Length: 111
Image (cartoon, rainbow, N blue to C red):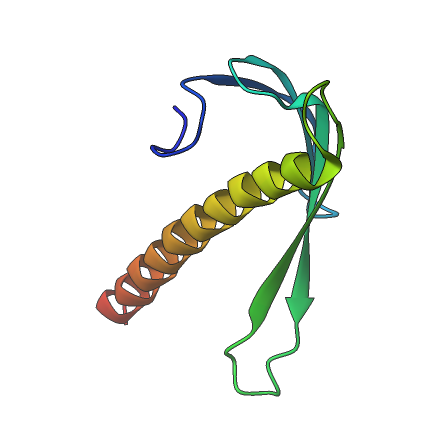
């Protein structure tokens, strides 16, 4: 399902690589009613030191390559792709924050 407000109703993505050990995920968009042609992205996770207080954080880096379709500018294409990435990263942050809260509460209950 595509986030409401984006100029597309559907998008089909393929998981090209998932490496849990190296924290890398690569996807390609292979269909949909949008103008992202030959879109490929790599998402990596990088642990940020916690300063010894047990509150470590993770930085998510996403890079992509996409063709600029006829009738669009490079800036328009990049703006659209960046908007999608920002929506995906906000969703990821919400999900992981909820998961972290759940597991903190679970560990308190089990103590």
